Length: 431
Image (tube, rainbow, N blue to C red; front, top):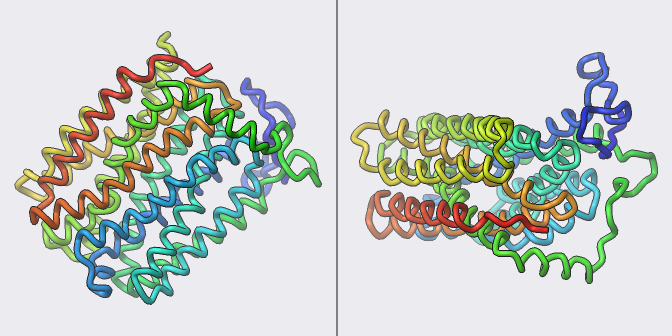
């Protein structure tokens, strides 16, 4: 079937529809087919990213790792992901999405299979870095396509769905991967998740098409020129708003990675549950994060419909959600029972989900479509820095103090700082 990336943003034209006879037997708007595939990619990418967290204790035991060393290993993915954000954003703005996403899916599938074959910590480190490099473009490509298919005041919900796919992956991942790891070992778990990515790669390349046969890149995509790339990057970095978006996103992703990387370990070491039990318990707060991600889109869209400017409709729920997430994260380790602890963490991740969607959507309304992926890449670099810090600082704090109290306190302080950056640093639109 044929897919066009050209969208009017006002309804769906004939060429923006696809005959979905293999799916529903009727004509279906192509933007929703593309969005569905992107959501699947986002979901699987987070299952991949959190795979190691499901087997942290077993991997640490096999290779003799301390909590600090395990934190460094967990952060290797985010380090590579951070370094590749700007190149990935520039590629997403100037290169077609079909082959870029296909190549990324195949590479991150290979990275997981290399993890399964790892004979040393160094092998795992290389595989995790390859995973970070290959997953860097996925949400940037997705955001770029959404800005082409949806008007500014209608983007929050599709962006919410795309971002919520990350939380959905973290809901499915601990349950599914904990069960696979508990039954067949952590190496089989990596083989399994690599297979999921390979299947999606075949679906993407089989369903998605350029506007015309034989066209190497989507219509309207600019060729990559080094001088234009450097000029555009310098232009964006000259705005205070770009730096505030990057700094604010540090706290959002720090919290997300704190829970994604360490929650199963928390339930195993502090609450003394088995690998499988920890996986199921970890999925409950992550499901709340998934619902929060969807709710963020609904709230933002409704505020915009009431006459709020798109930027204000994103910024206000974003700041409130970050403050709630910070307070509940700091409270979580003091909960006397597992039930109360899970509830408080669920509130925290629900608020984090709202912040994730509102923050990502804020970037799309503060700049025009031409450079949106590059700006989101700058913001995501800040988020990736948070993802690098969260496993390392958490591991070091737990190693030093013997509990998660200090680690959760640090996370809360960082998140409150991010709320301040969003509140006072993103008032100027980039032109």
